[in-house]
Length: 372
Image (cartoon, rainbow, N blue to C red; front, side):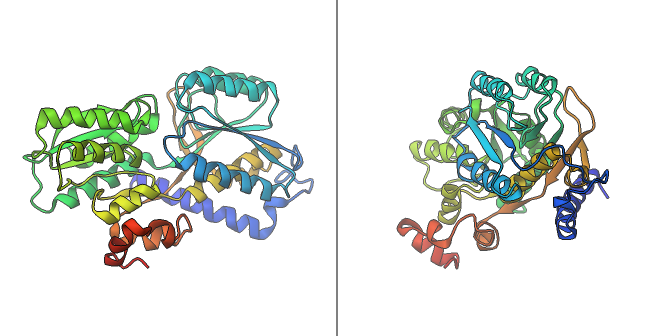
């Protein structure tokens, strides 16, 4: 078994074990054994620091799911103290400092700048507040990490993009790469995974690291790429996420492109799902936000309550950051989202209803895709 497949298997096993333990009553154990001796009760505060609002997933999914799960796990006695940095690393450092000053019990941190936040993570550690890196691997003495297998995300994007070009894809095909923010360690992993699939098979004609993941920055970068390569000579566009894919589509249309090339994405945003149905975006990567968010909430509550068996079951993998080694982690699997599996993914998981997707503008595309 390859290392990546081993990581995926472990993460699935961790999720399964969590369910098993819950069924056995261990998750709510309050006995005096070493396995379940909570250090705090249910009246706890989980600090949640999310990085930005340009990507709609954070406000629409991550925060509300974590909030509901913490309340459920603590019989409505626990609370989530939430702050969003809106892509400002300095603001997030101040938000972290405030949570430390207010003595929250545990912090879930999705870093704007994984390196810059390290000193704040150390201050939390010195104050006795555990920090769990959420979705992005922050530097500093974090206690655990939960995210998706980010290199696998890039591999899925790259592989699916090649499939869109067909069996005759070659180095004569010019690709534009629109990577994520250079301050986000996940972006580097997405890029590495995509390049492992694309290198030697197509030509990367232009590549950009997009400041703050902002769609308008991706749109400007794409306009520059079109001017340099030519609007009719771009075979496909690798976009690291859906928000940037939307900016890329705008740039192509503004240049007069009517037959859009295949464009990738990530996050299964509603507008991206609709673009996929309409043929304006080829694919996205669906990541089960409920699984990531709910397991993150379980990890946070288990950590602060001293439920070591549950915590270890949820964090059975290990990852390394630039500052620390062997960090307990959970890596959640992902799936390529295309026109053919919308019903089996985002609809089946309750992320969107068919009525959410199939608005008046997209009714014909939904009917053609059998989505009803």
